[in-house]
Length: 101
Image (cartoon, rainbow, N blue to C red):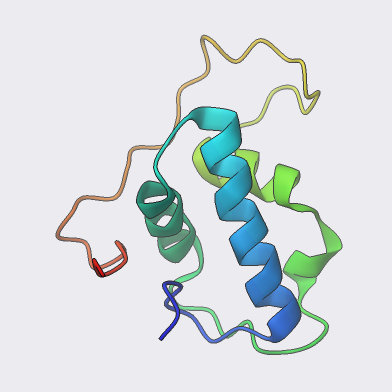
């Protein structure tokens, strides 16, 4: 079973994995937290189509969009994000966190 909670096409599953990796790299969070944030973002979506709209943006875009709750004042890779406020982490009892191995 996938750590992501929504139905996803192979291309979307690959993107979701890339988003999680980008969030870990960009923000220094755990993969579990990245997955929880992604699950929270799209938990009621069916992303199983081969032409999903989310495929029109890359993992960098979605990592910032999800982590900062859509409030991204500067998309530059070298932007100073020290004063930006991330969206709160989903609570551990939210159901969005992946199951431990």
